[in-house]
Image (cartoon, rainbow, N blue to C red; front, side, top):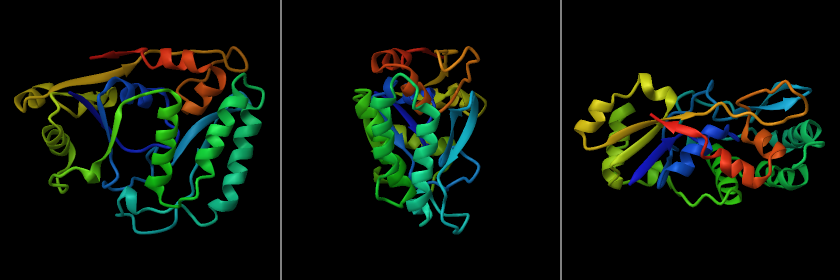
Length: 233
């Protein structure tokens, strides 16, 4: 069995969905510390032929809370309308707008202020839309020592789920050692997304934007093909 493990991200780029699609089970961390500068609550869309950041406002709280303990700001009830309008203005002339905007709207209008639950809902909705049949598992539901950190936590999750293969994004190549995983009975792979381009509004392609961008400009079948455009190293 092959698994992947990631934090929840706000409409992440194609590499995230490639990882989900290529594994049998995908574990989403909810019980690890929230990092302010991560992509958990933000991403980039195309607006005016350049990238523009979109962000979920987070309630001010302790810096040491886990992701599943963080709350979206109360004023997001009003701000999400502005966010939706921003996305609408950005993509209203895109070829797939009439199909994708209702999907995005459903995710953003979700009545749940818990950060993890809010993002998890959008991840599930997009997985369903793309017909990905990978099993999702929330990390806190796994029977294990949750005080473990880093690679020890990853290896223990693999053992608890009976996984013999673990796939990590290419960024982890400087962190994780294939030999160490092999010594624990696990084959380690790194997923490297190919250089994917598609037509946006002009010929100056802006790469690595939110999955929203890719869905707005490409039909469902083309996006499903893009899920396979990567290498395992």
